Length: 262
Ligand SMILES: [Zn+2]
Image 1 (cartoon, rainbow, N blue to C red):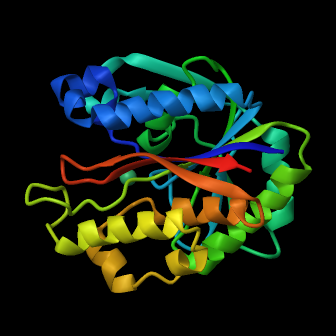
Image 2: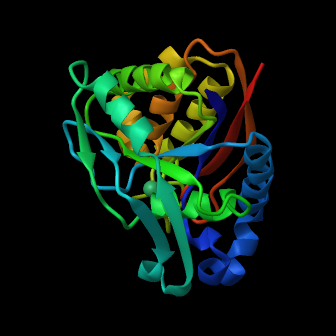
């Protein structure tokens, strides 16, 4: 059963050993992640599904990463001390694969090392859930409607499972918010972020799937496909989106949102 779902950003600077003084500038995001951790812990999850934009993307297939165990660290970002380990959830992965193949292209991979799209949210969210089972999922470059349908299929398997399942859609918003942003500055960046949050709060899922491709392109986001999969999972549930924080002082939009079930 689905017990928790949220949208999280994944900047490595959220990790205190990496962000150092910069963490002060995104303290709203850090506080929101801590609040989310409390919510997640209270939901007593057995398994966390994490949808990341930064695994090994297969352009024309969705990807489930099924390994015997997973490691996460931030050595790539200069932190050689933080190390996390997670168990896998092979039964759920196999059931999801069975349900989806034949309808949408899906591939199983086996990668022990988790990417920062998974590592950063789990650093905050599993403080009191050490060694929990996880299932990393990678989106594809198929169209947005396929991502929504992929989410709807995941929902069926999640609903059928006796396990308490949490879903984290990991992704950053626009990378073009300021002149010194990682992507080329565009006023469309802020416009995209604002529009997405508005549509999310109105629960206008169709509006999100049909967002202007030119606007999306100029915004240079990485999270939209993750978020659409989550909206597919939430389809037909009664929920209220709660935006815990949004900010972008380094030119990248960080959104933390929880979905409260009604
Ligand atoms: Zn990203």
